[in-house]
Length: 199
Image 1 (cartoon, helix red, strand yellow):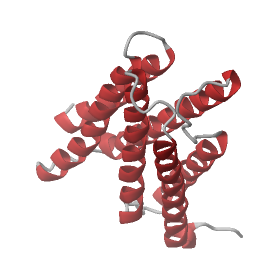
Image 2 (cartoon, one colour):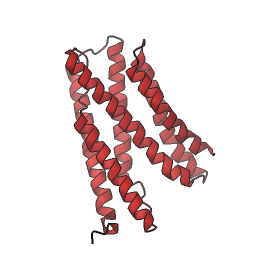
Image 3 (cartoon, helix red, strand yellow):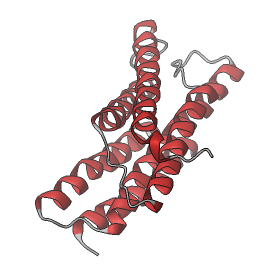
Image 4 (cartoon, helix red, strand yellow):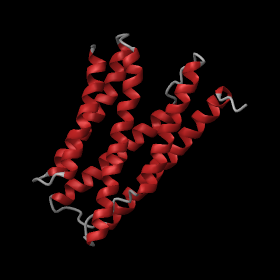
């Protein structure tokens, strides 16, 4: 297994570590979650760059790299949605993450749709390449998730607790991520709709 594929596999393995940091209470758990998430995000930037620059592109990489991205992004948003719900139920004064089941559903639906397109076009010998909108969506979403984790970390250290300004920033970032998700999905669907046989 070459280096890019090892980095991709590492990103997948970091997801359960990230979730443990989110769900299992221990001192500075959100700082740990932030560090793990940033490390996973760095592997996302590195594996593709190394694979292209060293001509190490493999079938496993084509399959596992986008899968690892989807697992990481969906796991983070699902965890944030849980945290949002728990904070609402207990009536705490902690940060409002503005992540709901609606956000998770829209993002998951887009990912399933693109994966379905890849399956359909693969049968016809066509590869659905990652476009600029898809890359922008992934990058912006990961930045949004880092901001959320940074806010949770600062709150953990007693900084910016219940900050209305940060709450607004997070809300805007989350819904821009959702908008980019919808746009990138629509672009993929429009570009490859001709391969879908409805007869």
